Length: 88
Image 1 (tube, rainbow, N blue to C red):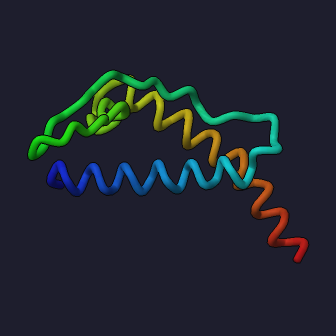
Image 2: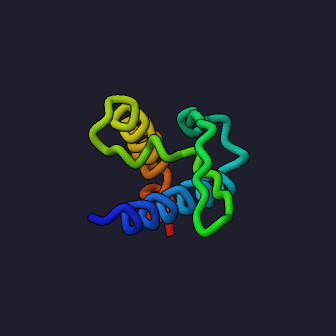
């Protein structure tokens, strides 16, 4: 997978995750803490901040830990989705 494809996939995943957080904002549970790093890249004279670039390295232990925490969070919420569908 190219870096630009990986960035698009990561961006999409983060957008979906943030949308889910907005929908479930009333719940007391939280998404895993996601550190932000001061990464700025200059492309064609334009500075672009990429504070979540560290998540691009899928094999790095911190990324694997974040993915596992996010997956556990999703699994805990999906139980209520299944229950809601079954009740419909």
